[in-house]
Image (cartoon, rainbow, N blue to C red):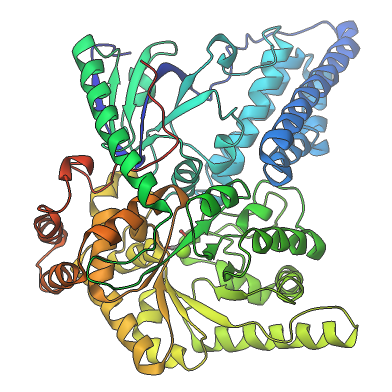
Amino acid sequence: MNTTVHRLRGVGVSPGLAYAPAVVLEWKFPDVPDRSVSPDEVPGELERLHAAVEAVVGILDRLRERVLERAGLEESRIFEAQMMMLRDVDFLAGVEHLIRQNNLSAETAYEFKALELRAAWGGTGNVRLRERLADLLATQIRVLRHLMGQSGEELFGLKEHRHVVIVAHELYPGLTVQFDRDQLLGLVSEEGTRTSHAAILAHSLGIPCVMGAAGAVARIRSGTMVLLDGTTGTILIEPNIAELEAAQITATRRHKLDLELESTARQPAVTPDGHLITLMGNVDLPDEIEAAVRYGAQGVGLLRTEFLVTGRSHLPSESEQFEYFRRVTAAFGNETVIIRTYDLGGDKFPAAFAAPSEANPFLGWRSIRVCLDQPEIFRPQLRAILRAAADKKIQIMLPLVTRVDEVERAKEMLAEEAADLAKAGIRAAREVPVGVMVETPAAVIIADRLARVSAFFSVGTNDLTQYTLAVDRGNANLAERFTPHDPAIIRMLRDVLAAGVAHGVPVSVCGEMASEPLYAVLLLGLGFTTLSVAPPALPLIKWLVRTVPMEIARAAAAAALESAGPREVSAVLRDAVRSLIDLRLIDPESTLPGRASGGSLLL
Ligand code: PEP
Ligand code: MG
């Protein structure tokens, strides 16, 4: 272990400062000694095994209840999946068999089978299994610790500290929700990027987060104080007084900006030269509804629905989805809520879903493809939307569209469900506008054809960047190449907008790019008048809209379109706003801003 390294750099994926002891999640099994038992001890070992499993199930159930109370039903479901894994009959039969046949102690046999399973899952190269693998590991570590008398309610030593910064090799959406929000001040991971779903979640929850911090797990010891800056992507291990003071100054400066932002939050999103902009919110989890409303979101431009299935043991029923959609629409009164149909696949799949293993899941059976192939998943969602839309402004958005017939087929299915509901006398909308997420190069190129069958377009710049630049959005090693401000993307944005305008189809942007201030300026300059952004970013983007005249944004966008590469685009954008905005408030190195978020600095 190298303890001399003092500063680590990663990518700031969720802004804010945090200063707290680190808790390093090593995801390691405890050292289990190889121990055999005598034949007459075998029944006792079998009993110990089941007692340990049930004890851990009990712990998980208590955690589930706590999360249920704090975060809601959906998030608590992650524990149901974990409990199911723990009680897996085949796995436990395998452990029992080893105990009986080889006279092994319960922990030795359990570790053996757990390692075997881990090797099988880890070796598939299947991204979807990786999230489940983390869940599996967490549960197995708990059982092993219990068998070895090391158990306690808390697995990671979190009990020792009131506040912590979690450091892990990789973070998963499911992992983030397991921690007590008040206790969790920051997140650090070696893997992951700005558009990994765990990063999007951390951002939505306002937890400062740095990803892509190579060597973090080896270099940070649990218990050491770390200062992380989720804006700049810097991590200081045991910072000195001068560094803490500097952080304090940064915090004060950002706080000043926050106050300024607060004062604009209730004002209209209008540029100084009188152009009205619509700012909607992206809602990934029920928790964010309140923040989106509080920050003045003019409706929901992207309601992600995957949380309804990921980490759960079964698919949500139609009525469960209906209740959720009602809840969201109720919070937004008369404003539009755009529900994105399940974007499953890639790194998002339900635990219980028997999806085939694929070499390239991001190029595989994903999103609209899954929905069209699996009507039993898609139709209940469509029905729930139709019912929720009976008296509310709801629109449907289809993810990862690459072909016109996908939209046509989805619309046919929607019409069939609408007719069925009407026939059954169930209160529901007869029609709901169906729009397309433009997030593949194919969709950009055939935008004119898609426009004929789409009520609107919403550009998903996360995937559009991934697929256009051929850069895995979750690969930390390629983070520098993941540039939504690349001229290639900017030109696509221009073209989609032009196609939309030509066919009278409204076009907005809901990818993370819209939540980043300089890029938001670029989007405004390109002519986008509706942006959907992460709720914590709403005040800053509003402030920007109110600060940067459209004339300046347009000139910057025109120069960006002619730029040779993303670096030049960044320079163009900085130069454009330099006289209007204190650029020190926006990260000087990376593109991520300091924005009003829940990040806290305890000094
Ligand atoms: C996108 O791809 O830009 C997007 C908004 O969708 P997601 O991040 O959920 O893939
Ligand atoms: Mg996408």
